[in-house]
Length: 261
Ligand SMILES: Nc1ncnc2c1ncn2[C@@H]1O[C@H](COP(=O)(O)OP(=O)(O)OP(=O)(O)O)[C@@H](O)[C@H]1O
Ligand SMILES: [Mg+2]
Image 1 (cartoon, rainbow, N blue to C red):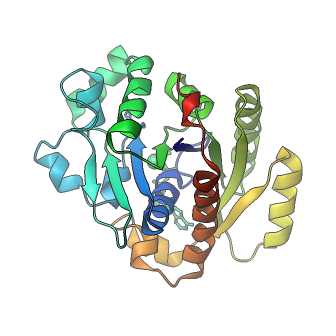
Image 2: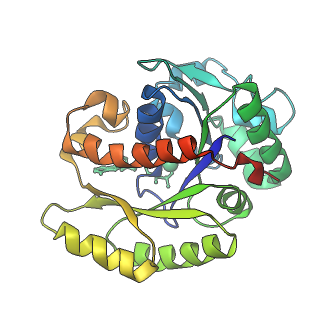
């Protein structure tokens, strides 16, 4: 069965989309069939990292078109080139004001989103589906968490993040997520990394899959490209590789995408 990996954080701006994009590219480069869905339809963003802004400006099909019944999810899956035998498709959210306003005003049918995940997995014969989520807890983030084989919970070393992460960890446990991994991001280089790692692991009773430093190169890149593509030899890319290692191990052990409702 294909694997489902969600990337979530309680607070915004922790680095979810950045981490999702790099992990997805690294996984596809290993020869797997990969898709990424941007479920942050209130404030979509991952399409920027994959260079799909122009395609969307020119009316490219989005997740919103699928949710409102105007297109299939496969119509909204944009293939992005990756080196090697794998493949990578991205399902972006719409950046049109009218579309975002519609979602905010009317909401949407989360059951349809679930159907979309299923159709995407079967239509593209995926090995893994990455779900880049909206921060905080709402109906669609709960769905994404509930159907995940692996949840990466991203947090910065910040007291507000720490508190919110505690809430999310508890919810994920109640929803029976099989594997929950913390990802520490934007950690200042002056911090004692092993101490930060062990303190969050102890606080939440979950392993930290990666400890990612606050990076000048990442800030300069400013979402113009996927970090591991732009800086393959950077130490941060190696640390991001740990996340792809976990995803590859999950795929090879046979994910249970059958947790889909
Ligand atoms: N390790 C890092 N060092 C420096 N900057 C980073 C790092 N990780 C992410 N960033 C930057 O932080 C900003 C927010 O990242 P990103 O958009 O991935 O966060 P997000 O969690 O997806 O945000 P949102 O909650 O709005 O969806 C981006 O400008 C990104 O380049
Ligand atoms: Mg994001």
